[in-house]
Length: 84
Image 1 (tube, rainbow, N blue to C red):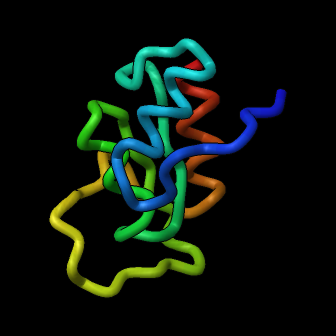
Image 2: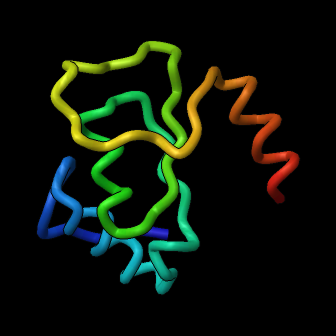
Image 3: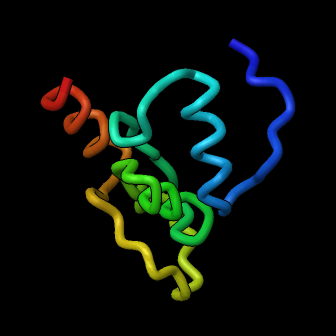
């Protein structure tokens, strides 16, 4: 699946909204997985759940957002097995 050009980029919440709209999914039904608190966690402004990967974490300490879950890649794997 190709999304084509987007009108926004991370960390703008509109970036996540545009992707959700293009794939026709309610943002509340999405999970944003990433390792950058400033670039990835703003997805939560739309109601997206977030999982912060602590491996190779990028945290400049200025993000007002908090992840719903956090852990290592193995934790994400276990989380996904249990959730789905």
